[in-house]
Length: 201
Image (tube, rainbow, N blue to C red):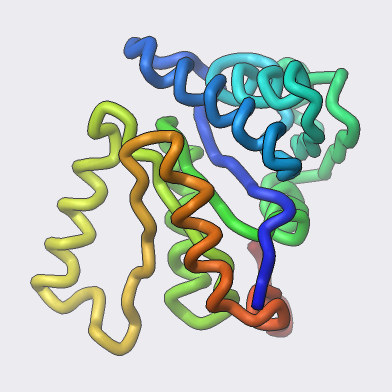
């Protein structure tokens, strides 16, 4: 049986134009802190990233911020986190975030958030790890992605022997129960990345 002690959250460095997004980030931060689950995130202090991390810290939780050196100033690295990791590039950032997390959750965001989410889905689809992956579908933000994935399955570009196992939560309160339910079925050893020579992530 596997446990979840830390969650990597992918989300925007901007607030978006729907107040529900920032509110969801703030609420999720509080829930993580109250359940003693460490946040692993992109290290910024602005947008949904900043709101999420500040909320975790304000409620007594623990945060690991991981940021490449060229984004330290652009995304205004949050300095009050307990652990800051500065990487030389984006590949290093994603590797550290993967290694520090037991599960992944994507809040609303832009192409960077989408890229990080899709990469995790791809690695899981190819059997590289079995850490749970979830989207928080606040205000139907991820509906177009869900439709696209259904289209890919319908046209057999996502084949039955290589399924996409993406969890969906419509409310912040659903995230942890759904993640815990799936994580219980995953042996701890199977969450780790299967090593491959010359792999970049």
